[in-house]
Image 1 (cartoon, rainbow, N blue to C red):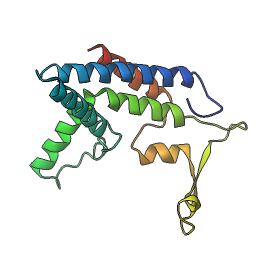
Image 2: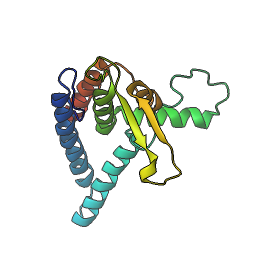
Image 3: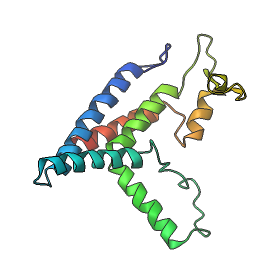
Length: 167
């Protein structure tokens, strides 16, 4: 983990997430690259495949958006199919589980020395003096990212990462 006061074994969880992610993405890149005879093309295909894993793994695209809203009456068939395809792709993606394990493990249940939830300060003044300084608690960060707020969910994501890495 990255925070100073770690509730539980977040350092081991973070290291396991990094190791399993490295193994799974390395295997995925090798598998994709082995489909092409030319070495240069194989490197490009493998790299693009891992880039797609990062995109659909939740780092760049919110793969859970709309999952909590079961009302599909306003969605077109194309919307429903695209959400389903992205969800299926994410469930097979090692980076999806790694991102969840790392972020939930870092923020869920974070408390300061007095047992209060940790608050993070986002200081926009460093980018532009007109930007405000914003203070957010850890639960707000997880809710904004559509992630669970319980630390045990990081272990679940880490378990699924192990399954994907083994497959």
